[in-house]
Image (cartoon, rainbow, N blue to C red):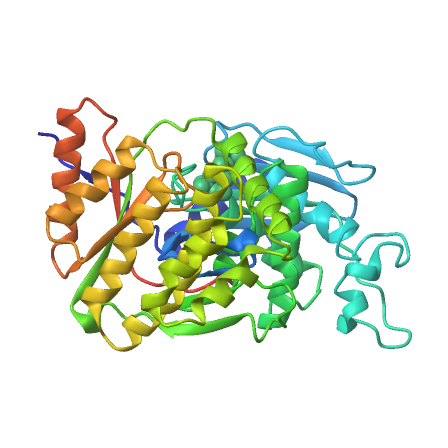
Length: 444
Ligand code: ADP
Ligand code: MG
């Protein structure tokens, strides 16, 4: 049987060097600086972010590095260690949503969003209503208006692409922080400012790259702390301060490890399925007379645990289609599981935390129907192999699983999963050893 491959995280020095060297080789000068942003893994709370719910991501040690210099004009040139030596070019001037092809849409879209959605464009305050300028970042009388212009950038990364670990957010968030820094916006220095950067990164993915994403990934990449899991409340009425709380997530002190395993399952119809799930949630909320499914989740989860299942059944009975009933049951119960998981972890009740991870996966498999055989089999092998809990993580339809295991067990378990995949003739999975890591930062 073939030995499982572990994807090592680039050290900050290695990653920064790779990005800076690619920059110099491509653009013939040294970059103004190097920044990085992490991929993320969501511990629990899946498909809840776009329902104004709760989720609990950690930042990965695996990161995307960007070496960047600002430009005087509005041109953008980007290259990646993964772009086959090809430089992609765009011009921010007159750029429309969806106007950039391929991977370059992610970084170009961030600068575009800062100008068009963040109030950092050339035209005086035309679009500033939604922006950080208007929020008071630079409202002093006579102060110079902050403007984001073009840039040259080179990326290097060790976040697996399309593995459900948010390489896209690692790219947009590292770009957002780099632009914030070189254009002096000052948003990266505070958690509140970072919320604006999250919005810009989301806008890039939604509007320029055409990827539906609800904010979990970008919040994780910009707002997680080392050693902590980020309890993120996606209710948009909350202030930046009230929307997150940092939860201790020091697995080592509990004698635990978290295995992350990218199944490398071929992605199937991902985008259409995600949009369809979102639509059913929105339509169901409307049919049930609430702004979002979060409202219902709060009602149900205010009840004692033993009464919740009956309450959920009564609620969803009002929906006509069985499909909608299943989707809504997942969202409501999943939001409750996040709160329960946080409480279990605080009480150092690892067994209960693991059970909640298992319930989360089963709900995603049976009610939300976003798993594929590779995810289910990997989870089954992990559970049989002694994991406290195992679940798919990310949007589903391929991607990764996580398993909470005793220290020293992650590599053994990963090998068991790889053996099972090999015997079924599936792609070889890849594993990552992870600890809760730092948010997007400047490296040099
Ligand atoms: P995930 O975010 O789960 O990894 P996505 O489909 O959302 O998957 O994003 C993956 C896409 O992001 C890639 O197809 C590519 O367009 C872009 N991307 C991410 N990281 C890089 C990189 N280092 N170099 C080039 N493109 C990248
Ligand atoms: Mg993504």
